Amino acid sequence: MSQDDSSFIREVNEELRSDAAKAFWRRWRFIIMGLAVLIVVGTAAERGWQYWREVTAARSGDRFLAALELARENKTDDALAAFKSLETDGHGSYPVLARMRAATVIADGGDKAGAIEQFLIVANDGSVPEVLRDVARLRAGYLLVDTASYDDVSAAVEVLAVPENGLRHSAREVLGLAAYKANDFARARDWFDEIAADTQAPRGITRRAGIMLDLIASRAAES
Image 1: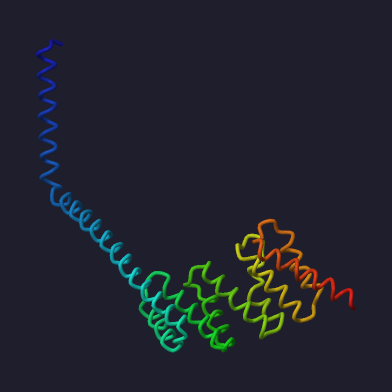
Image 2: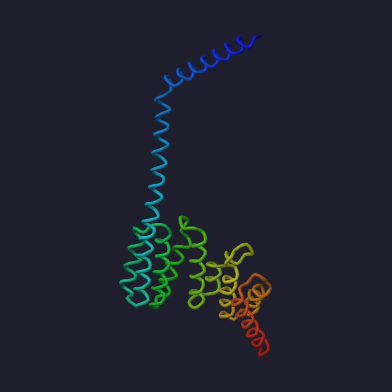
């Protein structure tokens, strides 16, 4: 095949491809343009949604800080009203944080039963992120030590006292304190021993566990 023949065939192929592309564009151009518009609009909508979420979350954060300041100033009623407002129309994690902080304000005001109820509501709310549910359960446990039986404390927090849970150290401390308060020193010792044996336990909790183990040993010596 001569060079002229090769050039002619190449030009014909290029022309055919051009004609096919033109035919394809004429047939599908509206769909292609529609898809392009959808992509542009979708991207703009996503960016707008992200911006709106960031702005509204920031506003909720400002409201949360303002409510905290009211609580620090002992303006309890105003603080609770501000937290309640955030629970209703806040964004991001702030509605849950407001519920938990409101429970703390209630506890500080002396209504431990009411605070425990609120914390347990959060702990049992499947729509709340698990980490916040666990924190709420633990907060309820610490309050229950002073007001309830060991079984009540166990029902609230023992689910956290497992090796894979990051709050296990605090949960074990709560259970040990509840057992000690109930004069169940053997069970209390078991929980504090678990803390002492866990190399990942925070230093403060380990130190407190050691103090409790010494107290238990002295009570056993007195018996």
